[in-house]
Image 1: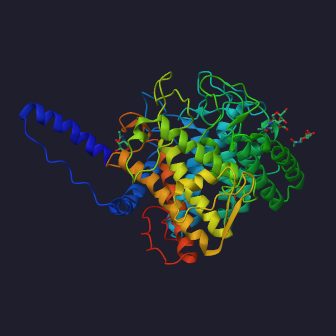
Image 2 (image 1 turned 45 degrees about the vertical axis):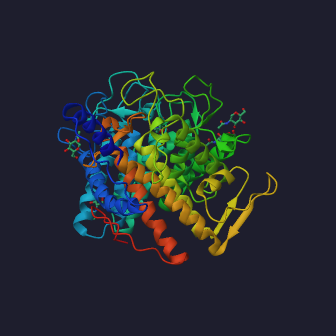
Image 3 (image 1 turned 180 degrees about the vertical axis):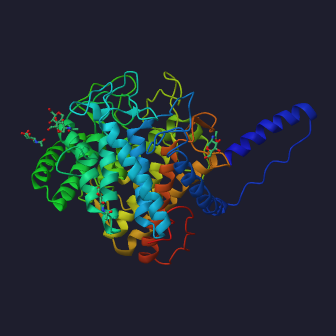
Length: 515
Ligand SMILES: *[C@@H]1O[C@H](CO)[C@@H](O)[C@H](O)[C@H]1NC(C)=O
Ligand SMILES: *[C@@H]1O[C@H](CO)[C@@H](O)[C@H](O)[C@H]1NC(C)=O
Ligand SMILES: *[C@@H]1O[C@H](CO)[C@@H](O)[C@H](O)[C@H]1NC(C)=O
Ligand SMILES: *[C@@H]1O[C@H](CO)[C@@H](O)[C@H](O)[C@H]1NC(C)=O
Ligand SMILES: *[C@@H]1O[C@H](CO)[C@@H](O)[C@H](O)[C@H]1NC(C)=O
């Protein structure tokens, strides 16, 4: 454990200088110990993460339905209801609700979700720096914890309404499946007018999707893959919901807007580099020299619509993941000294100059970006298993080389020709990728405090946690990564021989053991 080793190092220096006594060096753990330690850590950290999420929902002194981005009121002050972060948290709560079988637990979660819906309806109608309900007010990044508008200026952000719509549409199906009241849905979620939460979000998205805004990292004014990819999926799921509820005209309107987005998405592909850009048609600045960005991968985690549009298996998406790893591996000192059992820690984008509190300093690895990459590896492995097929192409072959499967993948004879692997032959690749995901989780294990408290970032030099304490999104990212891991392990043991030992079920609300 780096933290412990570092502490030992500091302690030993102190002891050596004060008492001049030799220290016994710690015995190096045997090669596979880390897997055992990881398996023991995951259920503990899962429980702590679930607690971290619910601690930040309806905190004392906040309005009902409010979710704070972090339990951090100064250096930095994240004690606000961020629309994006809250919606990502709601996606986790809704999944727990979907899986819950205990009536008390269903009630508890349903109450939380309905409070979120009521609170967010109020926020939609709260005029703020960016406008009001009729103009651009839904693009507000955050609100005070009592629901008032943020008093200062803030850049417009249009990912929040898409993430919120995705969470609430998912809730709607689960709620109706559990025998929920359809009048509640028509009155509060999606009704004949846009005075209902999700309909307003989708009407807004259908109108503003081509517009420039600040994107998920609130830094670069332009258009963003993250936004448009999520907006498209939200609109397409809105089409289905509107049709189900009998609002066919609005369904057609969303369908046309989604088709318009589908047409522009291919322009994010950097054909000469084999990656997906975070932004296009946007002016580069010194902090965004490449538009290579982890948010591209996060978009796919939150919004892949299972329609082959930028699937996790897409060659350019795999190419992006590979490029991110290569770049972050090289720019963070903490990655350069990592051990064999640790994956790479990932940040937001290479030229990041925010360290969690101040700007104009070198940026850090982020816990949620790193966990997102681990989750991406699990999701990619799951896609391979579902299709019983792996395609190694020009832009993804380096990714496969990194997996070090024995024997190595046959290199495509010409750069444009791809290799396809089918049947049980995929299992060694899947297994290598699952191990790579586990190494990334293990890196988080080694760089976080034993209490399981997650901040936003990990210091690029020291490897210690840094930035906003108890960041809700970090906990969300852990829970969803563990869910993806558990799901892909089930697929793996079903398809690949020999079956891997069953993972322990996670405790906590929604318990993973429930169907
Ligand atoms: C983080 O949250 C936990 C409870 O969830 C709380 O006990 C702790 O004081 C918070 N802050 C820090 C720095 O851990
Ligand atoms: C709701 O509908 C009104 C009337 O058509 C429109 O002016 C307003 O912009 C819509 N609100 C949103 C959030 O799209
Ligand atoms: C269903 O919800 C509506 C309001 O949304 C309410 O008026 C009605 O009483 C509810 N019905 C039941 C059976 O709970
Ligand atoms: C889709 O694009 C067409 C052609 O540019 C435009 O006329 C139409 O208004 C767009 N529809 C929506 C819903 O965005
Ligand atoms: C970027 O601009 C090009 C050229 O005008 C256009 O074809 C493409 O669709 C634009 N991409 C996006 C995402 O708007």
